[in-house]
Length: 148
Image (cartoon, rainbow, N blue to C red; front, top):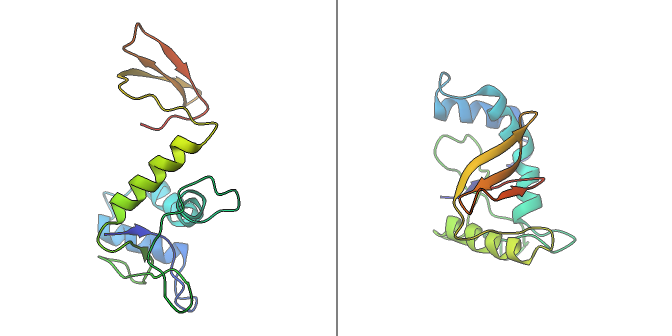
């Protein structure tokens, strides 16, 4: 397995083509079109932001497979995709993403991780999660972002 990125096959890939592939794989009636469009249009930039090299060197820098002669990311074709757009690391992509992302989060100066914490409720204001309540005596943890 791998993670959807973007195809580079001489302009033969696009967000609309990725959306079509996702709908075909998931079934028209099962896909939530706004979510599909969001993944197809914003997904590649989020992969770059969180998983690939970046100028600040803060995030994950996952060592996806690269062409030995050019250094270009290797892309593969998977499942119902009509273009090669899947980044991978041997047969351990999920493990590498998890490892590198966890290390990046631990290094980040603005991210606090709470281990061994039981969340009892999400604090929502204006349809946005702004924190959590925990089992630890109803402790409230406010945040600009919450990842469970």
